[in-house]
Image (cartoon, rainbow, N blue to C red):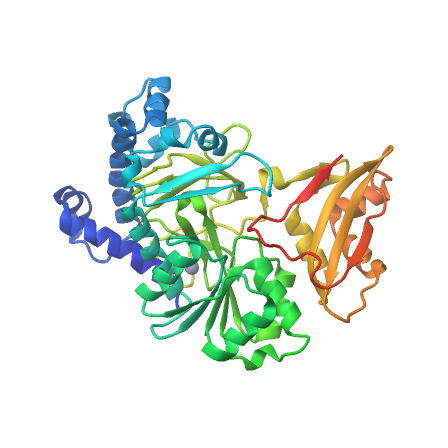
Length: 457
Ligand SMILES: [Zn+2]
């Protein structure tokens, strides 16, 4: 039950390299290998990066063109910081031609995932994984699960059921790798989830933030959730506001740990550190840079910017300097969870395209989450920003739990805690938020779409 499970994964992967490749031994092992310190991690990452660059240059038409465009070759990279010389890859580049990224033949693609990352519109991206990629992904999922579970523990996986090697299936394999017992329940309605919890007694529930929250709000009307033996709620895909976290903890008497994942980066990326305020991430397989979203300049520790990842071990589809559009920062504080050689990044509260710019300031979903979910009877919300003549304002629908009364006024008051809304009203830039209360079950989501404030101006 320690955040350092991720560090063990990182160190094991480095030791594997040292044992199998003389170059690593020479580079890293000079001091006698143990203990592995930050300097060794970066030496390993540099060797992996150099290999990844040579591989992408030789195998992918997209990357070959990126090198040529800049007039550089893989051997021009002499340190990790040289990575800044390389051009970014955008989600749109993948949407335009995912095959140009591929480094293996179609026959060697074990799994292709097609998806749209922000909401239900926008171009679709196709991401390819080879067998070896999937193997490594489940290794990391096992390490992530070890941060919250022990061998023998039951883990209820509440992700959409899919074909072999779907996210749910891979996580199930990851759970088995760490000695746990996965129960795959899909996104079944709340009564079925509760029935499975009673039958299988999972210690961990894993699901999207909105699914876990809905389960909690719907089930607590009839059940005492603290009785069910669940010790950890492991949430993914969406931001978890402090108010939601408090409500979840109170209902289940359980710990709440957040996972940060991206399909492009191999699904699993980072797990919230148990000492709080940030995530340790998969530094064996990923490099993280924080860059200025406008200029692309690499930022230092503690500076907020866009997360840019580079894969270090990907076979089918390496991604070099891939822009996530998620905003975060690298934290410079040493961590008191026990990890000594890993970095940490701050919770991502917003995505670039998820920000609605109003005359009074920025609005984005996590601000609404924090304000709205302070009211305990709310299950979910849907919002749009609209223009009515000269007036702009927020229109929000909220779903409440069965048989509970929430006043429009209560929600409006909660929304006034958001700086942009309060200021907008004060200066006459925004009209009063329009609130509509919906019955239980109205906003049930089937897809994995991320929360969004629709900008309908
Ligand atoms: Zn930590």
